[in-house]
Amino acid sequence: MLISFPEQNFNNFIIPAFQINEGEIVVIELSGGALFQPLLSKLKSLLTGTVADSPIEINSEFRFVEQFRESFLNYHFAPVTIGKYHQKHANKDNPVYEKIYNTPSLTRNTKVNTLAGDVRRKLELYTTLSWTNHLIFDLTSADPKGGTDLFGIVKQAITPNGAAILIDLCDEFKDQCTTFVKVNYIGGDIRSDSVKLISKSK
Image 1 (cartoon, helix red, strand yellow):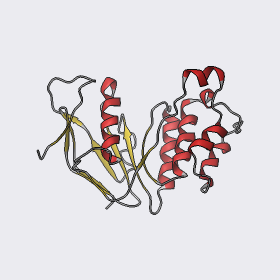
Image 2: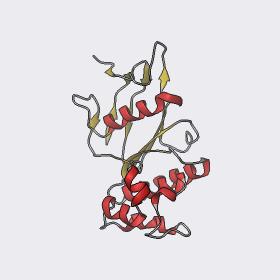
Image 3: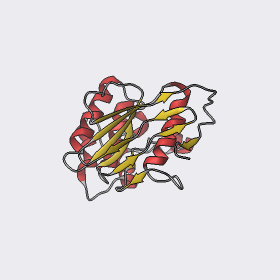
Image 4: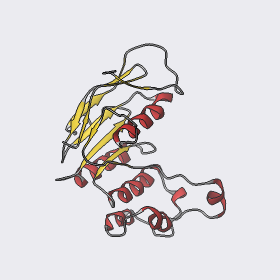
């Protein structure tokens, strides 16, 4: 067992209990709209073990597939290329990150800020996979086909001893995962800036 997640209440959103083991993929469906990012942020903190006194049992480190961010100055005066991105973020001992170059017309000199959303997510995913095949990801910025491609890459990458958690807006992969977890809203007043983490056992 890699992670054991007891039921949690995020400001009137209930996340049911689940576990994840090697070779498995868990899909967590969150509500869309303004609350998606705050809920995603809370889940990321819990599942990567950065919450103090967390009730989550984590026996193997999971890495979140971070989105590329570029400063105003870099964007306008020194845009980050794929080669520079890899230099900073990739594990050079694992060439899986180079699979992004299987995408037609991409080179080390291609500017990351010119990539379509799903291609940029592939860049971020392959780079994360160069470090670990225990990961947490979402499909932000990817179109439906891109999301399907990303899910397929992850499913292949976690076989046989990896594991992954997808945090998504819908249930499109409900029948393709090991465990499907739907986050339920139980009513009450909520604001996007006040999503609080409360252990149900407290």
